[in-house]
Image 1 (cartoon, rainbow, N blue to C red):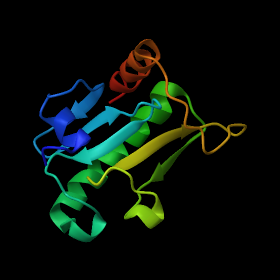
Image 2 (cartoon, helix red, strand yellow; image 1 turned 180 degrees about the vertical axis):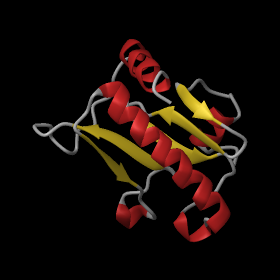
Image 3 (tube, helix red, strand yellow; image 1 turned 120 degrees about the vertical axis):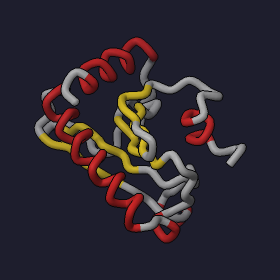
Length: 129
């Protein structure tokens, strides 16, 4: 999809803080500094997701969650995925958020961080894949 921001990151048309990728799945940091696990093929939502690609996404989610916990030293991870505007989907390319969480942290933190902080997070997670 030519107007999809995730497809632009996948195709290197815009920069992204890429943590990991293979032929089917890419993981990169959101502007809020948590990983997004995204299939490389443009798939609008979970209703369009095939089981094979879903399995590949899940395998990458597991690896990413472990690397986030180890690399960032968080107390847990929170994984979300939304479908359709009523559920809060705002990028119509299926993706999963992997949020590091600490016991005293506010759940809906949506502050954007600068590239220096994102690069530091990227390295901590990559070093633990």
